[in-house]
Image 1 (spheres, rainbow, N blue to C red):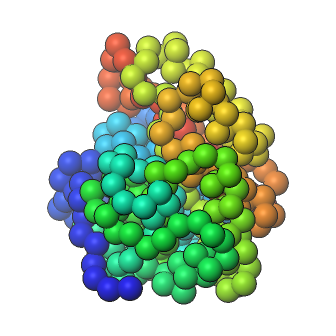
Image 2 (image 1 turned 90 degrees about the vertical axis):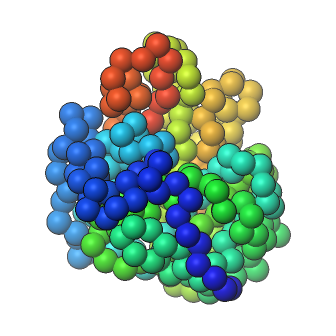
Length: 284
């Protein structure tokens, strides 16, 4: 693994200047949709296995995403964050792991957990190292500055970009992730990056997103894929969510909590067509 992955959407989805970025995150936290404050970082045994977090620009999804970051902070600093997101560009391998040594953000670099990456690849016949999929992808990049702000500590990352999101791929990848975590005895947090309904009226978005949220809180990985591919709920990261549910259950998650749901109409002002955002946690 060699090289540094530079930010692709700093200055677009979030502020590129560290001071401006810090202020932007604080605005998201204190927004009426946000958590209000960021808790002190926990130091006990971690019970949070995974979260679901949106990935639009911070003025849009930041207040909702801040709920997940707050839950992570309250639960304590993980060794590694395994972040799974959809592939918006279509470039690269169907399931692409990062080959970089480090990912840069305005808050500093995050080391890629090479050993865990290799363990996941070895545990399942799914995925390969391919940085083409990651080069311009925003769905993972936008998650890391929020976590850096919330945790105020170093953690490693395993970025995984999913162009192929079918049920079989999600099952195999989720099982491989859980096996690798157990084999390395790694204290890891799973993060599924997804927005929910895209560009519908608020009424339609809330109805359709309710279907997806119901399946997520029921730990129904197959159902999450089904609402997107059969029922037509336009969530972009259904595969990352399904993978996280599969791995989370293997790692002992039994309780799902919806932290916050809102639309871009709630965060960025009234709009004829909105995008839905959900923040959820899976606990042991």
